[in-house]
Length: 191
Image 1 (cartoon, helix red, strand yellow):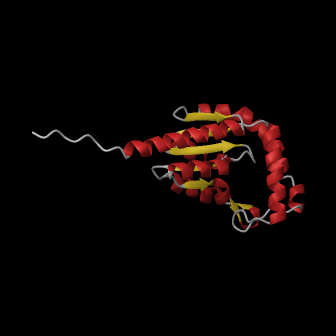
Image 2 (cartoon, helix red, strand yellow; image 1 turned 45 degrees about the vertical axis):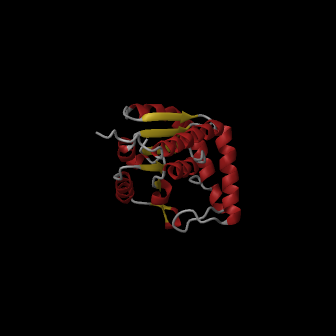
Image 3 (cartoon, rainbow, N blue to C red; image 1 turned 90 degrees about the vertical axis):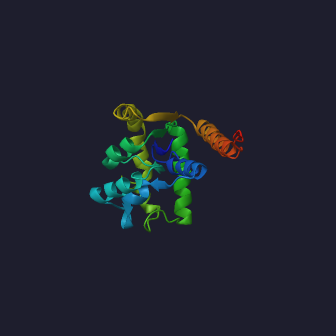
């Protein structure tokens, strides 16, 4: 795993898991939301967004999160591993609700000066309505999308507990590599 893409519905924990993977493997992390959400919650022009994805994924190794179809042909084609957070709707909704309430009250800056606001949660494009419009649709469409990229190793995680176990096994594998590289080589026989 050198080029890892983490996908999942809004609020599933894509960025959190992607950052953890990147940290464990010592790889750069790219967040598609950060490239897409311009000041005032304006979407980046498609060409600009695609250029960001193109530049980031041109590296030999990386971890990137996001579901944006406007650059799927770039990111998915260059990835070697796709981690799909396919959690039940109830799990994701409660995580998303807690996260949204926390962000509203703390006024946490997200990307390019954007913050979630209470009044913004009543628009059709806010994260809660977006979740209801996309969660089940993504679950239906993702298998067909994955089939278009047969080179991908797909890791489908169906619960936060399964994701935690997978991440722990990844850490163990990383530590084994480090340990193996610190074992001295056998001395060469002397003639």
